[in-house]
Length: 352
Image 1 (tube, rainbow, N blue to C red):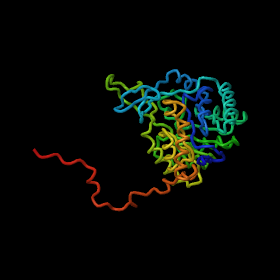
Image 2: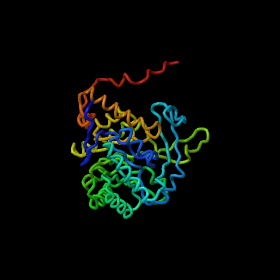
Image 3: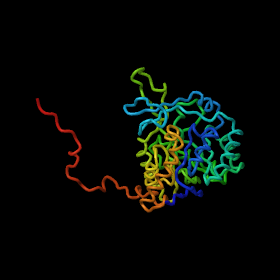
């Protein structure tokens, strides 16, 4: 077996596969399943104080889309490459109940050499800070602070936040890191051309790690009804996003250097994808949509496949981090190939 241990800031994980937050990680049964499936870390579904964000869960809706953007059955039988479109919502329980559940899940995780990570999603600063302090006081080991949800423009005003300014990222990160002694992971948006700048601001303000990058908003017209599918713009995720995440990981590594631990998210569906994100610069990789779609075995299989890959390469998981990113060249560095482009265009139509 390969050595799959990785370092994320001050925290060591037994493997780099993270069960990333989604509706399947709202209740204790789901969190327990992710822990038992062998994930190196499990991040519970984010919470905040906003009642509109909680009520949005009762309006949530999901669709799995296969080839040709046709709807396919939800579950393990969905074809490879399925895209998930969804309207999401936050846990319905109050903070006291959520915190008690988090403490119980952390205790369970410790018994399986797993890290349980509670997550707060920003609505307003003071309530978020109060929750964070209570999380630390309860003995939880790491906090994820999500300031990059894709839904802010579509949700009720003040329910959640999509932070696009590096200066604002810096201020919010500093607010948390000044108040807490436990590591803080900052989750940022991918809906920006300044992802590396957002990451740099978070690290400069004391973040242990940056999670990049949250899902994008998408809108898909339905040809039959001629209305938007799910009636709205919605969060969209799938394997197609893997190259985009890898691009942001590599760009951030180039800007920040190799000493910053990034967590890749959005696009990984199996252990090979975990390896790809790590080669692009991630120290660990979150998986959510594929687990929610197909089940907990996605996590255990990803760990097994990553182990087999590292073993075949005679490498540890840590050896993978950034190897492709550091080998990346610019267009201008590539050799001239004469008129190679002609091999990739269709033949001209014959004259009449």
